[in-house]
Image (cartoon, rainbow, N blue to C red):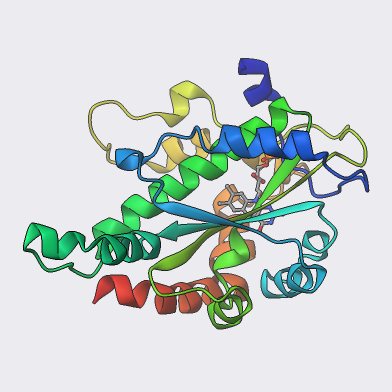
Length: 248
Ligand SMILES: Cc1cc2nc3c(=O)[nH]c(=O)nc-3n(C[C@H](O)[C@H](O)[C@H](O)COP(=O)(O)O)c2cc1C
């Protein structure tokens, strides 16, 4: 298991080999073993098979073409909607003599924790079955199109997209570095951060992405490529729309 975790890396190029039904069944069974708040599975997953819908996602997720050709595309949702429906069918509110309140920010957060626990269980299960995967965080962009394409109700919010399949070829490039334990983890309370501490924390990533040792930091590159990018602007706009019902 430790090797499965330590050797995992994101793959974006998959072979045409279809994932056998028995393998996918096992993958989905393992995914459902994820821990879940109250064992309620406050998440859903839409398996995207329709090539047209895959093409829509390739476009709405910041034009990442490899999504369209991935053998498996799984769309994870943070889902209070199905429990509202279950309460309604079961007349749970009437039986308890209580109003069925609208889901709030706490419900959203719990659903999101559940959805991501399931997605990461799926990622590690896939590795153990010889499959490779990649998260697509850009699924939170262009909510209006995504909502229409997948008929999403309120309170079923995009959590993440996973693309999976057998690798086209083993990757030979170095794995992406991570911080060292002693530089990364805090103990007992949140510290007053210093520039030196953050530089040390992200030293390996800085050196990896900045081999020419230009006078820039990992912060400069993250700021330029991600934090101030148009796609992050779109993520914030789009997520603001699907979060609205939970925040009312
Ligand atoms: C929440 C989340 C969103 C991500 N979104 C994308 C994405 O949209 N496109 C992509 O190619 N990789 C995406 N990734 C993969 C990361 O780029 C990758 O995990 C990171 O660079 C570290 O590389 P590694 O997984 O190979 O160690 C995402 C990962 C996470 C956890």
